[in-house]
Length: 60
Image 1: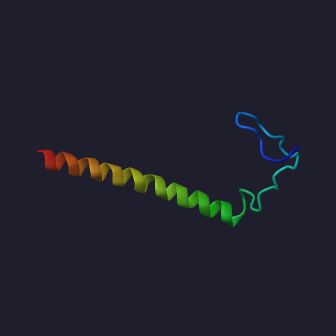
Image 2: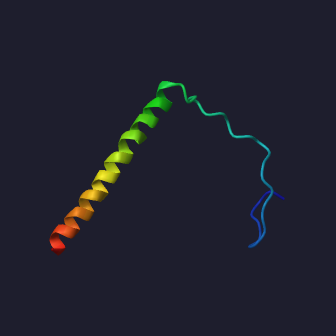
């Protein structure tokens, strides 16, 4: 009953809930990830702007 399903058929899923995350947002791990993302976004935008500037400089 819980083996492989025929193509186009769904099998029954378990009712177990996923465990709660280990780190809450106020914990250092959550803050480190948030800080990394805050720093990564401007760096990515600056990189993209540099690529666009380089392409326009080569074109002219």
